Length: 248
Image 1 (cartoon, rainbow, N blue to C red):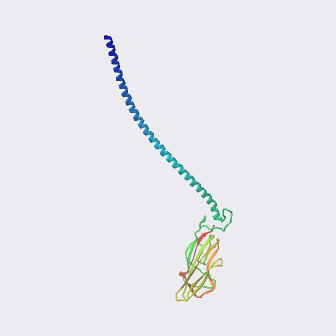
Image 2 (cartoon, helix red, strand yellow):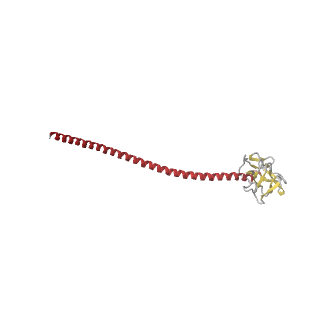
């Protein structure tokens, strides 16, 4: 009987020890589950961040693809423009169109070796004039390229192109003068100045003419339509010109 009681006591004690161990293990398991849940939360948070970054990268990739597409379109447009200009520039210089039709030679506002041509001169004092006399504007104020000679009143073109010439006279009271701008001796433009009233009489004119290198331009008195004696009030009389467009 005592042995039976002892056996039951030992069995009961073993049973109690097993329950305590199970509780401890369950507590450890619960702790492990809590830690696992925390780790899982951190992992889900990290995954969410990665997915968000991936989504942003995808949007940026789409934007970059759009930008690349636009840049390619712009590059194609510019390439087409460059090809057009490569064909157009020679046609502007030579006057030959792309389709082969020949047009007049063009004048461009630039040259490979630009030449700056301009002059301005006055007459000194009061002077009288004779038939067909070259008027010498001998007080030279401006003379780029030394194209104008004040000693003989002649302008000589240093480069081909279109030139502008301007002449202004102031004749003395009750005097009249008719003069001419000439190119190589040929009439370009008539000029009249004068008055029958008291006081000096002004007159002026302008000409635009194409010149080749070496062409000469001057101002001369008409062969008969002018008065005699002192006619010009020199300081008010000017002859000037400049290169408007060089010819290529």
